[in-house]
Image (cartoon, rainbow, N blue to C red; front, side, top):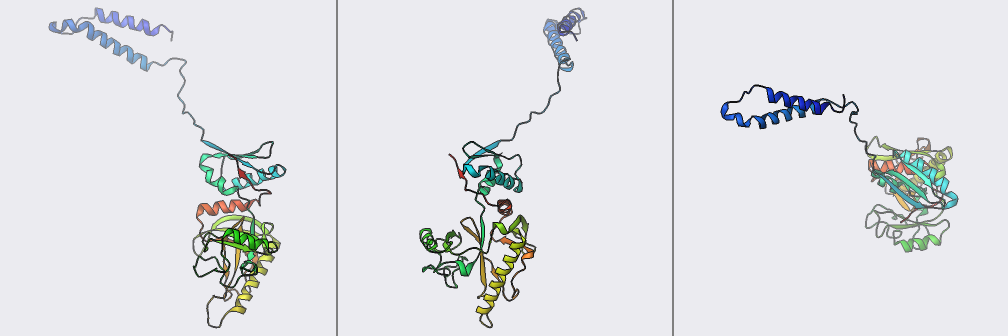
Amino acid sequence: MSSDYIPRLRRELLRAGATEPSRWAPAARGLRPLAAAAAVALVVLAVVLVVPWRDEQPSRPVETPPSTLQLTYRGEPSSAADSARVMRERLAAAGVRDASVSVAAGGSLTITVPAAARADVAALVGSGRIAIYDWERSVLGPRGTPAPRDADVTGDPDAGRSAATTKSVAEGRAARAADGRAVRALSAVPDGWFALGGRPALTNADIQGARPDVDPTTQEPIVALHLTADGRKAFTTLTRELARRGTANAVPGAGVEAAQHFAIVIDDRIVSVPFIDFRQTPDGLDGAAGMQIQGGLTPESARQLAALLSAGPLAADLEPEG
């Protein structure tokens, strides 16, 4: 279609309108030019709307890129590359798509993720160091020795009086013990801080993998831990010791009051202190079945915790910049 097609069409329509016999009544004859012009204008407009130009392209939806978030963390330059690898594996295990981790010249890490994944990044930048302790043998009392039997982290106001304390007191107790450390249990009293001494029974080296799951009995979210060969042996040995000690301390006719516990510590936080029911498992638990973390988890936090433990710990802590 030539570029002067529409102007020529307009002129022909106007000429046709000027010579066409009138259909208007005499009284309305004076309105004819305006009405004819309006009618012609409508026809021309209709022609313009229905006749496409040759160079017109079909419309396409505009793709808006999802909003992204860039978070930068300081780390040790010597371990930056390994920290980047661990973070990439954690993000993948958590199901965070379109994530990238880059290393700057000074050793800092820039993590780029969709904006909706901010909570995932916050949960995954922890050190991810796991340690499993014989609770009764490891928790320290006021004199820096293992605390009495009532030192637990159930939140019972009458429990843990000799062990639960402030952070500064717990750090003082830990400083006087071999391999001592201060850890926190948010549900404990008065302030939730405890001192642990001695080496843990299991660490990250004993964890082969982690995945979120659901307890078949309670239907609660859990994190299932798969153990290495050494880890299976260590867990079997630990739970057997706890079961036998509970049996030895039990009062005839009583319940599980004498049951012994193990504590699962991740970074500086106690996440679970389960007990071994010596009546049902007098020889402890078989490490070949692995172990699980449960209690107070949501499907979201279980997914994040499993991802945190899936790639091993960071060689150095990451601190947010800015």
